[in-house]
Length: 303
Image (cartoon, rainbow, N blue to C red):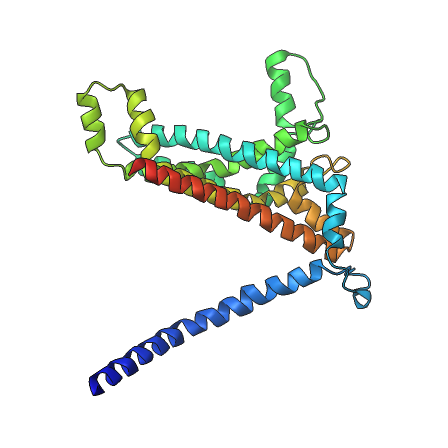
């Protein structure tokens, strides 16, 4: 009887110790994440205007309903889906090709890896200014290269016409972020066991068959992790869009991030801008959940 009481006290003591150990983390997460999120959601249910903050009142989900009726919102959402879909997939394919080439390098691989990471060292603002000059219709490098190869000078307004401005934004984003895919996929290739490839070579499998049926399935977890991180990290494209096109002309190249800023700060509709940000969060979570489900499926197929 006494022994059972002591064991019960010990279990109770251990549980309290564990709770006390994680209590600071719970408090920090609550103060820094939960409270701001709840307050931000409350603001999205108000008509808060930065010019008249004292006049803010609760209006329910009217901001969300207005967004659903806003054609610029749907245009920015479509641009964002196209931008993310094209950028992530092109970066993946280019990163996979470059990772394979670097993996085959036997001497100086560390130097090549360092060099390939150079675009990641530039701030997105600097990349935006650089590519804005590249695609300038008067003195831009792209139009000059077209003149050099064709002999005819065309004033192509890359940053004004749609979808040319979207192509220019994609070029800047892909150049800046492809090295990240290369590093993640290269890490996956380096970690692969050699036994399956040796067995496949003995069975007469070609290089393409080894890549298709061994390499791709085994680096599946690295692929999905890289795509999840890149999808969430594409929020940096705000800098590129803001500097290169500013969402124009006439909101044709608007993204959900730039439109959120325009609503909340430029137009002073902070309540609606906050609602827009929550729509962005929901879309990001949905995309991440989808990718993690695909990751779980790939693990089941491999193992």
